[in-house]
Amino acid sequence: MPVAATPSPAPAAVRPPVIAGAFYAGDPDSLRRDVAAYLEQGRAARPPGAPVPKVVIAPHAGHVYSGPVAARAYARLEPARDRIRRVVLIGPSHRVPVQGVALSGADAWRTPLGDVPIDHAWARARLAGLADVSVADPPHAQEHCLEVHLPFLQAMLGAFSLVPMVAGRGAPEQVARVLEALWGGPETAVIISSDLSHFLDYRACQSRDATTAAAIESLDPGRIGPHEACGCVAVNGLLALARARGISVERLDIRNSGDTAGARDRVVGYGAWAFFEPVADGAAADDADPIAATEALVRDHGDALVRLAAAGLDHGVRHGTPPGAVDLAKVPPPLRLPGAAFVTLSHITDGGLRGCIGSVEAHRALAQDVLTHGFDAGFRDSRFPPVTARELPGLGLSVSVLTPAVPLPVTDRDDLLGKMRPGIDGLIIEDAGRRGLFLPQVWEQVPEPARFLGHLMRKAGLPETYWSETVRVQRFETRGVKATPWAPKDTP
Image (cartoon, rainbow, N blue to C red):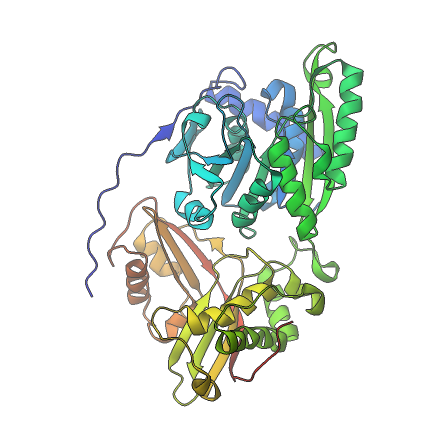
């Protein structure tokens, strides 16, 4: 059916820089030189082959005071500059009271180095239903704790989008829920913005900050309050989630303003930490070929993936409700790591589609993702009625695991058409708050690139021939287990 033209978007609301010239240089050239110097110091301290963290804690004082410490964290993220395309940034609200967590409503944030777009479509879809989250601009209007990080990010990364949030009064569990929702995959980095103790003398600061560091490194959110870290709510939320996810932590630096650019009678403490997701079987997650790793995972554990999907479908048929949580102790270690998959149901007789639902990005254990989508494919695909017990013997079930999506730089529509790989690429198109995804399997029905792209634009709610300079394209591949006759399975 025809697709209506997309209405012209309202003029973008840009949050201007409010601490340029105070917390960091207001002149673009001076700012670039300053940040480059700090990053060079950070690189010098980075061990060869150091893994890339998923999350860092970094300080937010003026660059002359905390820049050398923050640069230690950013230097660890830099090797993934071509992979990271989104940054979730959470810090404390210093000036305006906030209950829970507040997301900026602006369309972009500006510094002397340019504008950074806010990824509202992605963030709001994942935060929907969280009562602790609001969209509010007053807490961000004069806040420094997030803006101070942007020049580092702009110097270190290529094109990226931002999800800026401030945390006010509330429990760490609120922030943990927000971080869980916004965790994303390897394309998403998380930064927790916090300084440590404030306005103690040099020795007292060292003592208190050492105690705080021990709490962070033992993932103990019960020992850090506002006197230990101004960003304690966000820090403690991270620690609670890190403990639940089996995440490890490494101290990168801990100093205070008496070490960097101030007197020692009244100092502020700064620390930087890196947090790493667990890696199965000793594999180096950031050095591995993601496609080869996905192929190996499916080759070695394809049967387990099918059993999980079938268990989710079977649970829905028997009980009419989604399955619960997977007992991760009973699944192979690689399936405990975050992963994204699609589960497809088809008729054995003719291969006709009976249901297909999945995840675009890794946001939970792959085993849980497949189990849940086994149910979803049978009961939540709005194109089909719920699966019945009578149908099961005639259905086949397949699982497709997605490789991490990577940006596909293109100059225009023709350039994109020339770079598309029929039969290989899955594509994600984003623009004007709209998003569409096609799995590589869609090439079987739409083998011509121009038609493939046109249908994908329509799926995103855009005209088939739509294009703009702000279109963002990512591609991925899938590796999977072909349709297997359904058989009832027990949930792990």
